[in-house]
Image (cartoon, rainbow, N blue to C red):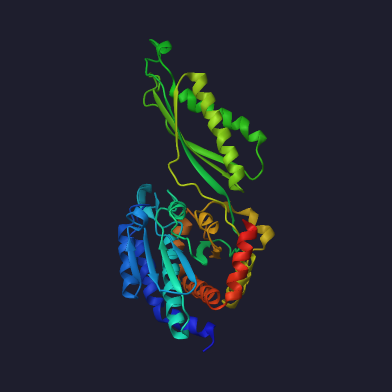
Length: 395
């Protein structure tokens, strides 16, 4: 049987189960590091399909590794399953407005289909379904990479819903900084001279960042929010803080920008007399390393599924964001594919409405594409060699 027909047959056999997985996660949305129901649902399913489970992977309660196979090339699928806050009545409930329920279902489905295909074809393979929590708020893949979780992987794959189908997603390196200032409280009218205004320090930091922007490269992005600034207008704020994101096209450039931001924060502390504390509340994310041979492979597979409206490389720069898939891409050949769904714009109410049932057709086609890509990499040593050669060149 032709490989394409085999993949289609195997995907059709589990299609209702994958829709059920997507729907369960969609109707039980959980925030990052709290995805206990999602993990239980996914691991129970994978265990039933013959995968060996490692729960609490690398010390994270809601991370897991599902493995199948003892020898052969290693193909990894990167699952995400955390939701976003504020997508219900009154802006209080959680919701899958970024489609991570769909990501979980597609990656799990691709792992299961690839396993069955390799059994039929008697191909040796090692499959890793990497359960990666808190992509939105922590970036667990960054931590997993530093702990060696993806060492030995020959190819890692993930797809994400988007407005357009895109193989050339431009992902920026990202560092998150929590800037905290500690001053001294005083009555703002009776004795302001006795106080040290922590909020002034935050305001001066913002002004310094505004001046810094003039000397930064066009690919750099700086943005943040004030998280704490005092509680009463007649008191000098003794505590104030802001959360700031810095992004750039390359990690080495971003590291220099981050050091300049630290200098700006130190300057604000000196000007006000406040004590400064800087922490990194999220894992750093690296830029995506694109592998042309892998992009070409996926381009052909997407077109076989009827997805011909693929964004051209020169147009992909219109969309810039960050993902911890970028960290994985520095360890092994990796593909991050955006699958177009009309009207889907992540982190919006419109995306929430599309992420479950309306996304089922693309769920099935994406499972077939990811599984077929994994099968090609497994079966073709020359392709694997080319992927690794390009990976070394791109690094």
